[in-house]
Image 1 (cartoon, rainbow, N blue to C red):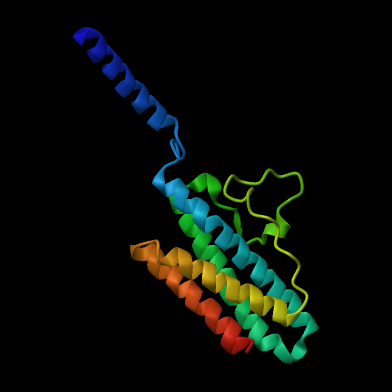
Image 2 (image 1 turned 30 degrees about the vertical axis):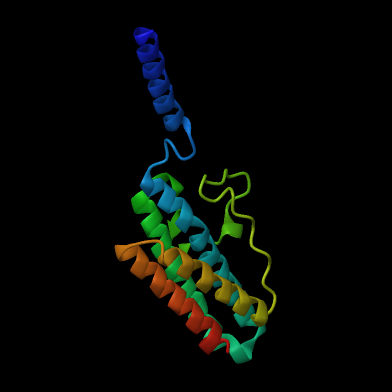
Length: 173
C-alpha cells in the first residue's frame, strides 16, 4: 500500500509538472510577452502620424500643430519599434528613412507578425476631433501599460503617454 501511494503521488507530481509546462504562456519568454504588449502601441503611433499628415493637408489652419503631432507620433512608433526589435526581433516592423510604416501601409499579401495579427485595423481618421480622441485613447492605454512596467520601459511609456496628452489637449485643444 505504501509503495502504491508513493508511486501514485510521484506520478501526480510528475503530471502536474507537465501540465504546468503546457499551461497558458509556456514557451513565451518575458521579452516576447512585453514586445507583444508594445506592438499595438507602435502600430497606433504610426497610424496617428499618418492621420496627422493627411489631416494637415485638409486643415491648413491646423497644419503646424498637426505637423508636430505627425513628427512626435512617428518618433513614438520608431522608439517603440526599436524596443520591440531589442526584445523580440521577429516582432519588429521594418523601418524606413521616414520611420516605421503605418499598419495600413503593410504590403498586401505580407503575413502580419504575431504581435500585430490580433490588432484590428485602426478606423480611418477623417477629422481633427477623431484624431484628438485617438490621442486621448493612446495616452490612456500607454499610461496604463507604463504603470505595469519598470525602469526604462516605464519611463519611455510614461513619456509617450504625456506627449499624447499634450498633443490632444494643447496642440488640438
